Length: 165
Image (cartoon, rainbow, N blue to C red):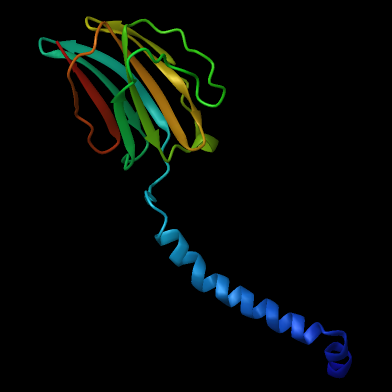
């Protein structure tokens, strides 16, 4: 039977396939390690979103199921308005400047958050709105009366932004 397989080229094809498989096993981890910006993370889901004010400012806190290892908090460029993740549709939100909070490694398949997707503001914070969950990240927008200093007070499973007064 081995002669028949050899004559049909099967043994040569099988040998080539095994070699390619072995090569892929060697190259794939190297390619993944060389991917710029690749971050190992634990998937998270949102548990709670709240706002609170004190004499120094207004805090917005998002509590997740595990420590958040990859997030980005920044103002949108002047003149840019918040948009819905995925569709790009505009989001109605109160405010004249907008802080975008992006949490990566979001596990949308296990998303059980049933809390508000729109939080009323206090003081300088006019409103907080969920921008969506898309491609492994969750985006929230914080609408403020004007561009103000803010502080990232995030720790562990809580992503927290304090807008200064």
